[in-house]
Length: 428
Image 1 (spheres, rainbow, N blue to C red):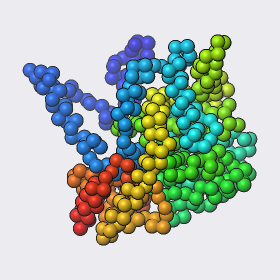
Image 2 (tube, rainbow, N blue to C red):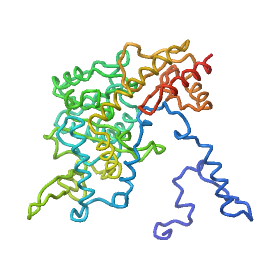
Image 3 (spheres, helix red, strand yellow):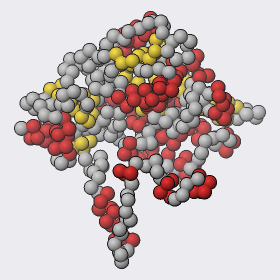
Image 4 (cartoon, helix red, strand yellow):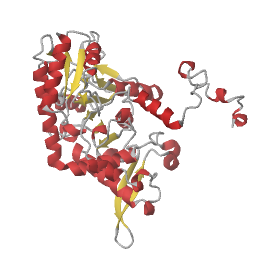
């Protein structure tokens, strides 16, 4: 292999890895130590990395500690799902195809839009693909993005935009929500996250109405588990809706793999990236499932593909379908109401601590809220970590005093009270 690559050594093969993260010495394993003993040492080292199974988690900012029912991965973890590859041979892939069809149908029902694909890589790339869809009108190239959109989504947009010929233009919030995008005849789309990066509910109908009045497409970044209590994107006027689908039956998993959700109107279906599963009948009238459209795949459309990234998350989408099927419509309502009620209680308890206040006291929120603390948020988070709480995510605001707290249905009144007591002691 080295000869074929024109390299002299194995070290040359790894030259792209920065020297600062490469070990420049032997492992120095002790002589005469057995494999079980080495394994025990490595396990002890691994235990120093604390995780949400041993901490009470109030962190969010895009990845949430929701309850994952046992049935989800008991089914999604079956060999016919875990080991199956892209279903190019439908006669051998009916189970996977049917599950993906059900997933698409559920996403359409959830969002109030006409069509969904079989998933994308993650929420950030789903948003980038939504912008590709919206920029299909000649002469409309500008992309307006609310400052309430997750900064990681913005970084992904900038990366995609560098090659596609656009730079996302950020319009500011007013007291944590809203704002006034500067619309013009060259604007392709307006992007709003609802609830936004601070957990605040946006005046989406007004923002999307203004976008449509200016001839621009409306793109909403949404929280799937908010839709039991909030109006769906289609009802709010969104032309395209995208989400990070981690909360739909997927564990936190140290950051992934996650799931990109996208749905849109039917008139955009032939440009929708990724693959779409369809239901049909065979010559004998039996129901069958096939890959109906693959608008972006290089092997189908080659240079005419709308995107050259062919990654989807079939296994995560299957888990999402199982989770939504287990939850059902009323279950979705119950989870949403529980998240909101517990978040409201947590905000009330935490703001009773002297010096602690809501960053946006007049703005409504769903399950997350931004706290302003009398000390740097990172310091408070680290101190609470020692007390068994993953208390939130410090936000990169100029003052460094903002902590984003997320409260899911998993949190109990006792845990919220304990967090308030511990934070009060840390800040005393």
